[in-house]
Length: 182
Image (cartoon, rainbow, N blue to C red; front, side, top):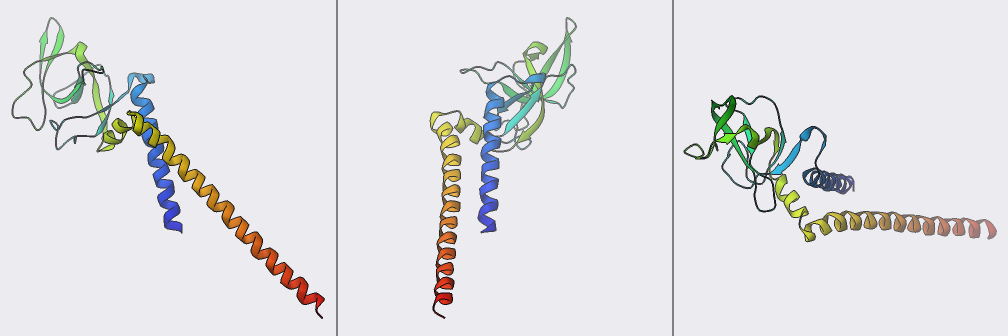
């Protein structure tokens, strides 16, 4: 029974983490952190497709940093690539980026204004769950599955208490009838 309880709490923890990441990815957070989902394999093996990345803007970027750049909208997704080269134009840095899995650098250079931030952390495959949670059926599962688990767990506890109560009542009746028969 201990193993099921552990699985239950781990499952609820994962659901809670997904809910938190969903909230964080939808709403802006203090400190300009962004949580984004990687949708291509261009950064493999460093960052896998379906990973989530935690991105934070900084003042200085250097060669080798993994940055996320571009627009974030329903129709446009930003890109996460490594800085391969930095040039200066009119006192502003211009970045040449390249995906680790790509053979050549990106054709378009990235201006400092386009950079969303540097990747601080990536968690493999969790992006699939966050992306699913953003869909209506996924959001329902995010609410319905934990709710059903809690209801089941509570009903199970109530059933166990009822069985205990009936057993105790039968034992008490046996004790009473044993005392009375003497």
